[in-house]
Image (cartoon, rainbow, N blue to C red; front, side, top):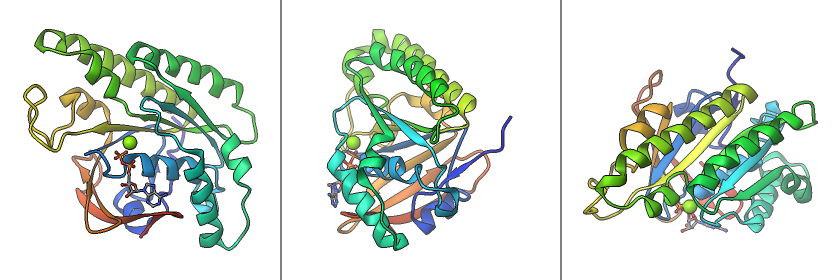
Amino acid sequence: RKLVGKLSTGCVEFDEMMGGGIDTQSITEMYGEFGSGKTQVAHQLAVNVQLPQEQGGLNGSVIIIDTENTFRPERIEQMVAGLSERFGMEYDYEEFLKNIRVARAFNSNHQILLVDSALELANELKDAEKPVKLIIVDSLTAHFRAEYIGRGTLADRQQKLNKHLHGLQRFGDLNNACVVVTNQVMSKPDAFFGDPTKPIGGHIVGHTATFRLYLRKSKGDKRIVRLVDSPNLPDGEAIISVTTPGLRD
Ligand code: ADP
Ligand code: MG
């Protein structure tokens, strides 16, 4: 087992809550309502992972499995500009974009298969200047939620989701990479999925994900990130701001 790496979120409180940053070789699940900032955090991590270690990165590249078509290159451009502001040096946005490989997943089976493709690609890039150090699945559960409808299909859905998560864990282990997945929860109680504060995927996602982060909106651009039921860290909350140049304290 390799030494666990830490990827900085760029936010002091958030990093401290995570014991220094997002761990490699673990799955970190971000769940929250629509608009709570899950995709924004994902974009920021896709930028940060490329930084050298002394700037909180892992000197790596990233694979994004985009299931809702919410990846925005323009957002990367804004966040890279935000880096210049933070570190007082110039960064090339095109370089950052080149190290972000985005794959659209058209349905849940395709999404699962894309992890195998990601494993192959990461293997090819093992000795590259920037090996793959982060895989993001945004959203982990949207296709599953849309495709598996009705009580009878629940066990089937959980089994597929479980297999998918194991594939992702394997990716994290083999590449000493971070695995970040998002999971939307509903603002109103849902007749089928029940308690709105409990993410879909229920306890299977819960038990596989090592770190579970509950995001919610606060005043203005502020977001509250809560670490829930970590095996080795105290529960805690961090406040972050989602701004045009990126995540800030
Ligand atoms: P989720 O993925 O949890 O549904 P998002 O990560 O897409 O939510 O968050 C969307 C929110 O992020 C917007 O409502 C806005 O507050 C903020 N946001 C998105 N783009 C920008 C931007 N360019 N500048 C500042 N804030 C932004
Ligand atoms: Mg989103």
